[in-house]
Length: 241
Image (cartoon, rainbow, N blue to C red; front, side):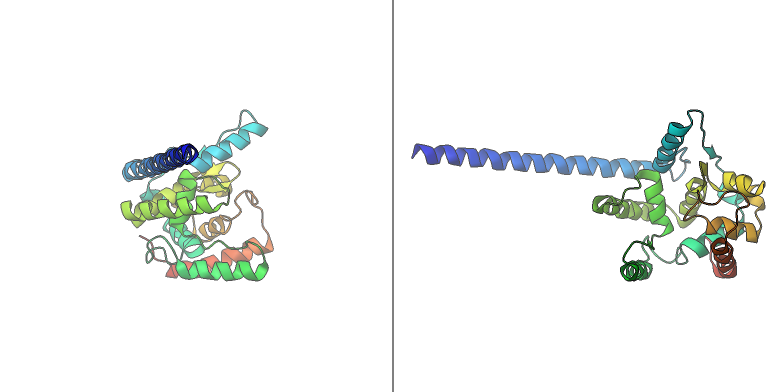
């Protein structure tokens, strides 16, 4: 019948459109992943001048003050205090040298804590996951962003050495309002260089990583002091690449 013929033609057209749309979406997704891979390969031997998170923070600072500037200065791995390296690993990712990007035990513990509290109080993210987020992604918490973070984390762990991952991480994370990287952090909080940080100073810097804009130079709280003491006690057992 003529009506059925037209219906069949329409259905075939719809299916072809759906398949083409799906194919185009898949190609676009693969191109995005390729873009990530190319940047990660480049950063194996070249230092990133900025990150997605730094750009986002800079934009917000400029909204309040058009003359605002970020405090950031790259320093090589060899010019960062061993104390800060140990402090960051002790505080953020004790199994950094052992895992391949994900600390499944840490993730499970974070999930149980969040379930008990009824809200997100712990993330369980490794240094590699945090680096993936800082380099490329926004701060929003959506399932697709977490999925993309996981994919980028695998790329980073596959392409980069642990030493390079930690070097970039120490040079790009936030340590104050508009303060990024170990060198700027050392000068901002202690008027010294990243190379000359003492163990106690490194522990304090590691303690403020989860909430860097809450603690300015010299500001002390009971929580911060206790957290720094715990990190300091764990630093000697923290292996570094």
